[in-house]
Image (cartoon, rainbow, N blue to C red; front, top):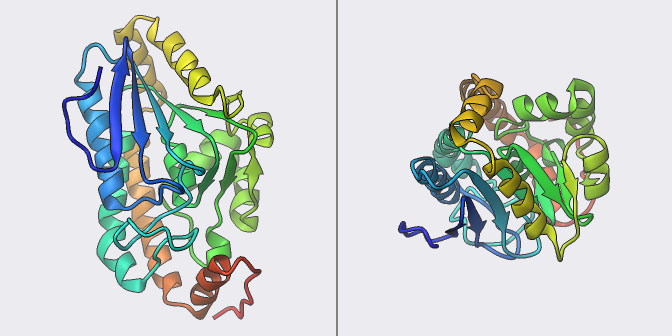
Length: 269
C-alpha cells in the first residue's frame, strides 16, 4: 500500500508491517532542510500507523546520501553540496532541528546503504537502528577535509556505535570505510550485495516486525533513552563550531579541494 501523504522528494509505501521510505534525489541524494523535514514527517506519520512495525530507509541512485546542500537542495554540483556562509547561517540550525525529530521517532529503522554516505549523509545513515550494506557502500566523516567540524549529531552517534577511538580515527582522517570493513568494525550489521540489498533490509525489518509491537517500541525507547536530547545538545555545539570554521581560509580551500578531487593545501588560518 502507498502512504496517503504527499511528498516531493521521498516516497512512502508499506507492505504488511514494513514501510519503505525511499529518498528520490538521484544520483547522489544531497540533502537540505526540506528533505530531512520530509523524512521526519514520514517517520512521525508511520509512528501513528498501527500496522507499521518497522521502516526501511533507502535511496535511489548511486549514493545513499553524498552530503548536504545548504542552498536549494536540488543542484548536484559537488560532493559536499553548497557550503556558502549564508547557507550555514540561514539554514543549518533549522536543518539540525529537523534532524533531531528523526531521532525522536518510535519505530525501528533499517538503513539500506548501496553507495556513498558522506558527511551529513553519514549522519543520516546513523539515524537507523541497523544498516544493511553492499560492498560498494562508503562511509566517511569528511568534515576535516572540508575544513569544518562534524555535524548532524555524529559526535554522539558515531562513538556510541563503534567506540571513541575508532570514531576519532574517522573524524581526524576523514577516511572512507567500505561496506565489508563497516560490518567488521560494527558500523554496519549485514553485508549484502546491490542486487539483494533492499530485500535483505526488508528481511531484517520483517524479522523485527514479527515480534510484539508494543514490546519492541518499549525496548527501543529504553535503549535509545535520551538520545534525541543528546543529539539536540550536540548539534547546537556542532553548529557553533561549523560556523566559525566556515569563515576560515582553510574551509574555503577544503571545500574547493574536495570539489576538485585533490588534497587540500591548508595553512591553519
